[in-house]
Every structure is written in structure tokens, then in C-alpha cells.
Length: 304
Ligand code: AMP
Image (cartoon, rainbow, N blue to C red; front, top):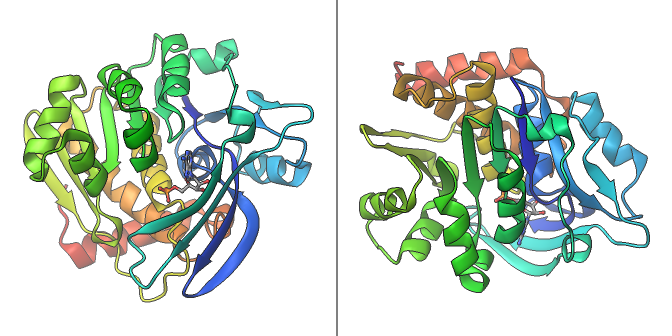
């Protein structure tokens, strides 16, 4: 049981109606890895610059995340994202994206990362996702996430990357944008025609919907009264979802296990949004996860 993730390793400057942070640790791979680390062994692949310190690496290592394949680029700068949210926290507004060291990164995976059972191609340039995917041939489950920027600027590469994976996780608006299908059921079917057998439409605070060849399942978000920063919620969802599947040895995508994984995804995302960046998930415990899962099942009458 092991999971490899590639995606952004970032400094994020974020403003929400509830506060702001400058250059906090973030990135799709970071949020994903922290969430998945509660369930399985996770290794992160990706570059950082000279500005990425030991403290940031330590935060990952404290959660048991393997950082061997995080490559430090001499003289380089770490990926940077600036964004803000208005009162509708479901919509992220990007103000600046600087790929920096990701601009000419060529992933070279260690043998341990190549041998992963589950692979998550987190949000980053689609050609990079493909480069990692090509090196992980033995994986039983490969999933991919992306965003509007790549749909707009690298559509052909993204479609090629999607056709090479088992599972696509995307915001519902991005699923519609990718497939040019206003109807979500048709959009999911259009994605399945490209290759993936599992499609997850993320719906922010409203939860997520799962499409498989045999069925459809939707789960709400865990209802919170205090949400401070939604950045990384999607990646935390993916980390809970895939981390659970890998930890449970459920890589063949049995529908019952997928439903359980959706519940863990919702729970991890709900913790992530309670505070800025990685602040909440980095001090989370497995007991808190199980307690919230039990509460979530009780409130939603969720039966597995
Ligand atoms: P989400 O889970 O969708 O909220 O993703 C949030 C993370 O995505 C932030 O921590 C950003 O660093 C990262 N991010 C934003 N834009 C991009 C991009 N174009 N490529 C890769 N990562 C990004």
C-alpha cells in the first residue's frame, strides 16, 4: 500500500472575507499528501526553489509524508499562487500564478515512487502529469485533477492525460467546461468515453457526486458554521478519497468502497476549510477524523 502524488508544491497568498495570509505553504500536492497521510504511505514528487525551507519539509515529514522525490532547484523559486474569495467561498479568483521551478521540470521518480499502488496526478501542467503517469505502470488506480487554467491553455494535453487515467476528479463547473456539456450526467459520460471509469464532480460546500459505470452517488459537504479558507479543499477531498481507497486495498473501485471513500473525502475537506492553508490539517488526528465521520453519517443518514 503506497501512494505517489505529483502536483504543485506552492507558496500561496490568500485573502478571504475572514482574513489573509502571505506566502503560506500550499499547493495541490501538499494539501493532498497531508490528507492522504492519515490512511496510507504517501510520497510527493515535484520541484521547489531555494526559498522553500526545512520548516516546510518538516511539516510534511511530521505527517509521515515521504519527501525524497521533492527536488530542490538551485537558484529557482517555488511555485506561487495568489488568490481571493468573495462571500461565495465556492469560487476561487486567481490573481497571479507563477509556475517558477515547474516551468522546466522533468520528473524523475525514485523506484519507490514508481512502484506505488495508487497515483494522484494533482493539478499542474498536464504534460507533467503524463510524464509521471508514464513512469508508474504498475499502479492499480491512477486519478487526475485539473483546473480551468489548463482546460483553457492546454486542452489537448489535458484530454490526452485524462485518457490515460482511471479516475477524474474535477469541480462541476470545470467538468462542464471541459466537455462543453451543460448537463453534469452527460458531462460525466463524455469523460468516461475518454477512458476513466470513475468520475467525481466536486461541488464545494455542497459536497461531491460520484459517477461509475454502475451507478451514481452524491454526498453533501459536512455542514460547518465557521469556514475561514477553502483553499486546498478539493485536494484534501482527493487525499481523503484516494488515501482511504489505497489504505483499504480497494483499488479496483468497488462501488461500496468508493462511497466510503467519498465520505472520508468530505470529512478531510471539511477540516481543511476550518483554517488557512495547511493550518488545520497539519494538527489533525485520526480520532478527530473518525469522530467527524460518525457525526457526518448520523446527520446525513448515510448508510454504506
Ligand atoms: P484547491 O484544492 O482546488 O483549492 O487547490 C488549491 C491549491 O491549488 C493552492 O494551494 C494552489 O497553490 C494550487 N494551485 C492554484 N493554481 C494552480 C495551478 N495553475 N497549477 C497547480 N496548482 C495550482
